Length: 157
Image (cartoon, rainbow, N blue to C red; front, side):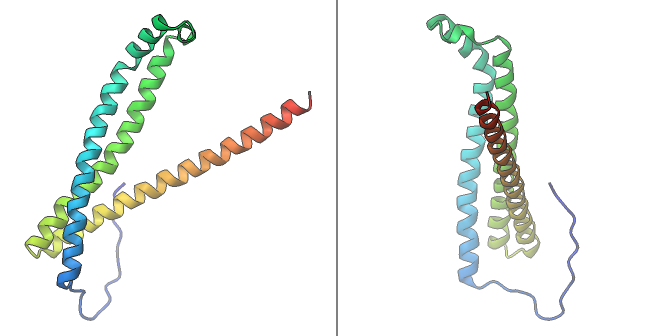
C-alpha cells in the first residue's frame, strides 16, 4: 500500500504547529492507539472463529436437522472468507498503530521526521479505507445488477 510520492518543494517558511495543533495530534494518537489495540484484539478473535467455524457447523448439524444440510466444504469456505477479512482488518489496525506510535513520539520529542512518518501511515490508512470503499461500492452495484437481471429473467417465465 505504500507509495513513494514526490512532492514539489514550495519555497518559503515551513509549517510549524502551535500548541493546539500539537495537542490535537497527541490526542488523535491516543485514540488511534486505542482503536488499533481493539482492532488487533478483534483480529485475534476473528482468527479463532475462523479456526473453529468447521467445528461449529458440525455441532449445529447434530442439534438441528436444518443445519445437517450444510455441505462439509462450507466450513472451509467460511474459514477462508473470515481469514481474508481478518487480514484486511489487520492492516487497518496496523496503520493506526503505526500512526499512533509515530505521532505520539514525534510530538513529544518535536521530531518532524516522526510526525511526517506518522502522517504517512495515516495517509495509508485512509488510502486503504478508500480502496475498500470503492470495492464494496462496486460489489454492491454488481449485486443490484444481478438482482435486477434475476427479477427480469424470472418474470418472463
